[in-house]
Image (cartoon, rainbow, N blue to C red; front, side):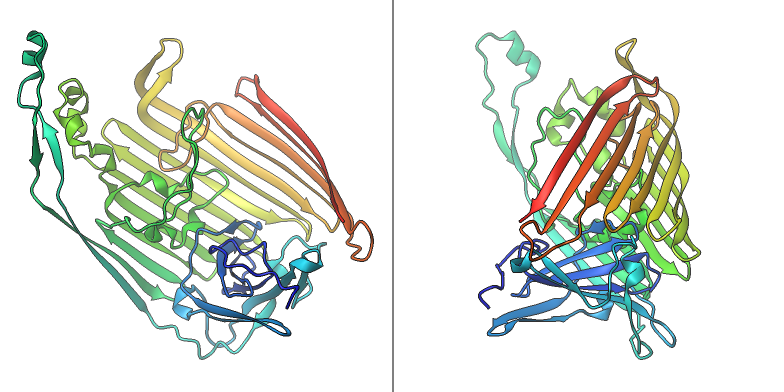
Length: 473
């Protein structure tokens, strides 16, 4: 017990402790799995793991867990409701399963129920199986979350005109404080499990006030936009289907929807996602902005108008661990229209080597900045974006060559765009020795990372090169 490392950690922050993990591939397709981790006190961490090894910890699955540290170590029990998962069940169905334990006091030693070879880059492809799923419930589920907000606002208003104040020296306006009438703002969020693999989500004027706050970051004097993770439950359901190499879908661009509907799921080899929303944020100006005579003429045509957003995502599994996909998005607001579409694919050439790529095209009718005239010009702009990666992961040696770029007039108003007219190329190489637990140097690792940026005219925008040596003693 003295060697067990356990703290009352925050959710998703248990990895400095000893922990155990359960990984469930509920479709047994080796492409997507739920991950559940627990420290010795039962504190939880959960994520969705995809075939490329990426882990999304923004997912918060409803489950219960408890842990106890005893004389012979520790014990953890967990209850994971089937209704918290998407899955296939029935006669002949299997789930992939990994059970893992990590002991920090033994140099982070990892023990696995199933052998996991470092010569195979697919951890999900080496999972064991759960059988006996014939009796698992496949009933439909319905979740309703109503909300009601009652508010009253007050503000100081002018009692004199601005022209009178300006024309009378020494004149000031103390104003008076006015309370607006009470506002009653009802809302509803609903989730309907059409099948264990397909979910329909509906939001009518949803209230996101209870959602966890964003991480604290410095936003002043930033050259490029800052990315914030999605934390609103409505958008988190099935969010992994919309995530691709080019971040063409960022649900944070839908700020305050009056109504939104989302259908996500998987049927056989086909995964899909459809999302439609009407967002009132672009036309929602404050009362002070509405009353300002200098601002009012510029915002008049936008007042109380909604933007309309649509996203379609299709993906089909091909062969054992390959896939191809399609993505299309549309954003429409007054004087701002944007449409994006393209294809992507992932191909596993061997146990060690995978290649994935995406190509998108866009057309937009909106303001584009003209550097020659130093002003915005309302016009149509067309552009392309791409991303690719070639990954080789062996027991000791590995590398990844990757790149992405967006042309000058590419726009994805439903996505996250850090920079335009830019290309990025990077090469990562590493070598790690085998572990020698009883040696003075348990393991050593060396890696080199090169990254370069250049615009679409071939001009350099910066580069970096990092080399590092790590030792475990």
